[in-house]
Every structure is written in C-alpha cells, then in structure tokens.
Length: 478
Length: 97
Image (cartoon, rainbow over the protein chains, first blue to last red):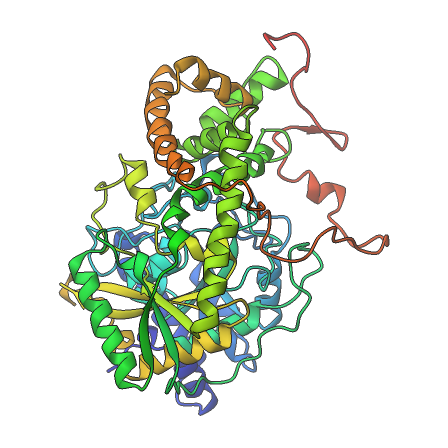
C-alpha cells in the first residue's frame, strides 16, 4: 500500500475532499517517517512535538493536514530561529515572517524548522553549526545546500512540502540533489520580511515540493506585495491554476556556457535525454550563448559577500543572540563575533569587508556591479529569441560529506549554473530529470521576470512525459 | 598577495576576533578567491553602468502613520542583558580601543 507520506499535497487534498483519508492519518504518516529516519537524515533543527502537530489539524481546513517544514532562517513567532548558527542558538522569534503569516492564515501545519548551512552560506548543509544533514538517496552524500534540510525533508516524507531560500542556488541545488522540485521566484515577488538577510539584493524565498503542481500551489500562497519589504513589488499575487503542460512550438535555449567541461558526463547524458524529451513533445531546442555568464561566480562572490558583511554587522551581542565576555563593549563585540560565527561565515564576512574597504571598492565591488549588468543583459537578449532557457541545475552529482569542505573555491565553482539567475533577478525552477546510480539529477528551467506561470507549464509538460518525480528514496533497503 | 597585516586590518574592520591559525587559513583562501576574481579584469567595463538592483523601484516610503509594532517587552525578550527597559552593555570607554 502507498504510504501517505510519499504522496503530493494535491493528491492528499483530493483524498481529503473525497473523504477517502483522515487528516490525522496523513499527519501521523509524516510523524512516523520522522521517528524512523530523522536520527539518520537530520533534516531538522527543531521539531514540534507530535501532540501539538496533531492538535493543529482543523476539520474544515485541509491545509492543516498537509505538514510543511520551514528553513530555520525564517521567523515563526515563539519558535527558535537559529540560522544554524551558534550566534543565534538561543534566539526565539518575536514575530512572524510575512510568508509564515500567510501560511498560518490558511491554517498550514508547520511541523518543524529545517537545517541549513549557517546563515544560508554554503552548498552542502555541512556548514551548519550543529550537524550536517544527509541525503536520503545516499546517507554518505550531502543533500546540497543551503536549504538541504528542507529538500531532504520533502524527499523522505518528513513533510509533504517545505519552504527554502535561494541567494545563489540554495533552493534549486538541494532540490536537484534530493530529487524534488524547487522554485527560485522572480526577485520581489515573495516578501523577505522575517527572512534573516544574507545578501538582500539576491535573497528570495521559494517552495520545495515533490512535483510541479505542488510547487505552483505553494507559490500561490506565499507570493504577493508586502509593504513591510521595501523591495517587494506592488503587483497581484500569483493565482494558482493547474498547469496543462502544452509545450508544442515552445522555443527553448540550451545555455552553451553551462554545458562546458566542468559538467559531469553523467549529468550531460541526462541533459541530452531531457532535450530529446522536449523535442518529442514538440518543443524546439537550440543552443544559445550568454557570453558573460562565465564571470558569474566571481561577480556573485564579491556582491554576495559584500552584502553579507554589512547585513551580519547586526550580530554584535547587544540586542539579541550570543554575548561573549569583554571588559569593554568593543572587546565584547570582537569576542562575540569570533566565537559565534563559524568558518564559512567568517570567510565571507572577511571577503565582503575587504571588497568594500577603502582602495578596493572600485576594483572589486563596483566592477562586480558592472558585470551584474552585463549578465542581466545577456539574459534579456536571450529571452528575445527564446521562451525559456535550460541548463543542468548542478554540474555535478551529489558529493560525499567532507569531499569539498576544505576547498571553498571549488565549492563556490559548483554554483555556476544557479548563480546567474539570482544576479539577473529572474525566476528558475529545478525539476528531476534523471538518476545516475540511484542519485538524482536536476534540470534547471529559467524564464524572464514574472514568467512563473510559463515555468510551471514547461516543467509540467516535461514531468508528464517522464516519471522521475514519482521515484522516492529508500533508506536501509526498506 | 594578501599579507597577514592586511588580514588583521580586515579582521578589525569586521569586528572579528581570529586566532593565528584562522588568519593564516583565511589569508590563503581569500587569496585564492581574489586571484580567481581577477578574471573580471579581462573585459573593459569603463562604459558599463553598475547595476545596484534588479528592480526599477527606489526611495520606497510609507505614509507617516504609526503602526502596530513590537512591545518593549517583546523587543527586549532576546536581550543578553537588560535593565529597566534598556539594553545593558559593558563600558564603551577604557579598553584597548
């Protein structure tokens, strides 16, 4: 018999409305999964107790029966929000993030806060100050990052869906590594109020789900204008309608620069197969060059660290979070930040401080802003000829824990496919497009600003022609 | 090539207390990243305008009307040290500076 924890939200909502399943059974199946496997996967930093989760079910509110997990850099009033950092290990959120407020208004049942790379800085969830999360497809491998806990939770059925945040790929890359769907929406369409800031001009919250329909559905609940976020766009929220998946005649550009020598041959094989699937469905796929995209990684690591170094200045031991000893206020701040931040966060603060410091601002920061313009312009030109662009989500397969952690530059380079999207502010979705030795591979589909509906149509069309989204990981051969 | 003195200078600007081992590690790793970032010199960008933000919005203001906000108690609820509605910190003067 199918386990309820393996179903999608839209399937479960259908079962609930036809009274074929009881809401308590759905919630219990997720709780059972957590009891069975969480000690091995470690997707969560904080789980609500089973009684509270079950008591949150409301008879007339179907979404209260569909457990959701939230990345631990979003504020849920009265709950810890640690950002997987020692510096916030005792922090209790005094208010709700706007996305959380929206979910609560619709009676969503939040079952826990998920693990991440400290302050969302990383691509493997190994930078968590508490413990790494493991990939449900292979416990020796990373789930990707930084939203590794949210992606692993959905893949193994601890929750039916989840929210992540994406600054340079932190929703899409873990979705790819865990064989699920992840959307980085257009910048400004989802409020960042109550999301702990990493790089404010790049950060965006988005859904992680088992299939495209769930992704569109969850996106409809979190998008929309918010006066509390001054970078929120004043436009109507996305309205859900089930995608039809007609992609006949669609013009798809395969980004040449993202299919270079760094792409693992097995990922390349999955891409070739994906192109064939699109063509068989009536789409036209052609190669397109975005000449400045190869400069994305240095551009991103200058801009993101510069923004991070100023955003993280607020963690000074004065108003909240960890406070270390010190005879003077300044000494206390030095010690607090030295003890409270982990190695990757310090590395990025150092880099960001350097590129903004006197004498280097123009050589690094200003120059990177110019490249950001060139990269955004490359996309604009490409979208004059193509409806959407495609690439691998990650050039490599999920790697083993410890494999890359000692070489930051190598880790940064693995973000090459996802970073350009954040720099340009456009939306992109990652969907499963194959398995190599039982490890998932993700396909990234990118569109112009506000093309989320189109991305759902294209990825649903792909999904209908494949069955990768129906595969679930098995832990311990059960 | 970044020197240890420069690393200590950045460390001071960023208000971070680092150990000698951390300084040496970051010196090497930041050099790697900065050398890689030197690729941005390959293209002449003199005439390219910088892109500070992807959205065409600026100077976003709201009406000057008081809104519901955190209470004093809520705002102080995570304070490491507080007294009579104030955040308490060690003395500002008197240290090495």
